[in-house]
Image 1: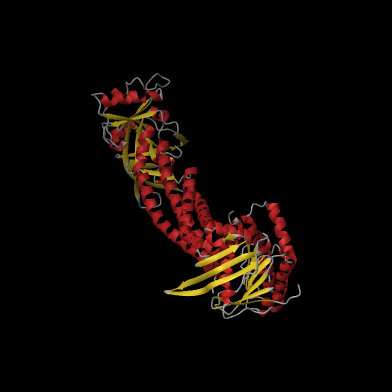
Image 2 (image 1 turned 45 degrees about the horizontal axis):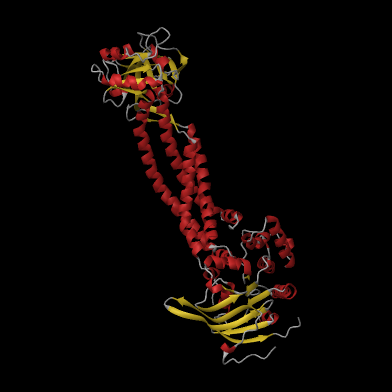
Length: 249
Length: 389
């Protein structure tokens, strides 16, 4: 691992370089809980390069999921700038942001979030319905995504007929089927047994290494964090630390 | 791009019991709704079909029905001289002077009585109403105490079957024939010789004069002349117009009563649909959040849930309408409030009623689904996904 930067002055963390795919400047976020205002993120600055594999780690309540939600465009910051591939997504209105997510973000959730009444094939096809692709083209893309994630033989199974690991593979196929700019994964192994978790992490690793996908992951799992190239440590809404894993790529 | 329809259909199918209960509620309301319309239309159809467009009925001015009308013999002879009246094969005016009297008869198998219309007719009456057919027996003989009864009267009243007899006007009258006038009020009448009826009831006046026009276009002219003739105190109407007026009051009453009932029921059904849809939204909050995160807009979510509610309504509509269509096999009777006589009729389903019923069901579905669908569309993605920290 590389030398971690100063923990006393986290705001001095420097952006990677000019090749940054995601640039976050002075990001603040708080929620209202009853009459109280709860600050979740305070002045976060960071940048993520293309084809990077990043993990956000930290204790519960540290703000890592909120940061992921902001990057994925499903939540809005109170203040700050968030540029993804040259677009400041904080300036997009609701419908533009929806379109932006459909085009640029692939989601992997802890509990897979598959639609129970749709088959694996139909679940993976969902994001493609928001593209101008024809039915035939969609079928080709879905088949390719299911093949990459090794679940093509279960294409016409419903989620309830699949194991947790298989469901997560379908969810990953859904996340990559549109060839998004970034893939965000919130605790992707959080609901899986050890063997399935290892397989899913290997799959994410493969997507990043072989297919050049940019992956941003939130995890509590040290094994998952070790798979990432770069790890950001959050605590009480502040980016406390960052380091790179010594991984033989 | 819309959320695929399979999502909506399979969600309804997956929650079979809830869906079935909600659809049943809606079906019941649509059943009542279409039954009321079918009842009102059946009555109207029966009464309106009773009239012929070429026939003109002349009544005493201010009379709202034949029962209230009186036309003396002098006025009847003046009316008979109008040049617009068609002629029969013997070159005589195709005109019938008729008497209408109400009597009460016992209903078969009960102790209840009901008003029945007696129509004293003359030879031309049969020709003026070609829809009236003798199905059994023969026509009554002039000057005899004989009657021909409508099919529905023969079926429903004591002493009215062929060969039986009934007593009225201090005489006993033999049923010599049964007539069928299809779905018209004549099927609920008793016909006999007008002169015999006038004597029996000691009535020196007719109730109305019915005649056929040479041409329909001559009606305004003859109407104007009759109504402005100083010797006459009459009003002339086409037979169709007369029977339409007869049906209006009852039709309006049935519709108003039915609509009040339907409104109350439909409120219940809408609330039922609303509860179902709110529960559907609550059970699928994470799904909604996921769909929104994937890039489906608020409008897509709103549309998907509204479609679900619409399908609930349409399913209820189709089942309710299909059930009510069986009512067409039922004949019901009521008292015509204008003539005070018994009128039997059938529920009648028309494409228009079917369209109204299905539209009503669709509106109920949408009304029940509107608020829950809006809630689904307005959900914050982060809250829906339960992923805040």
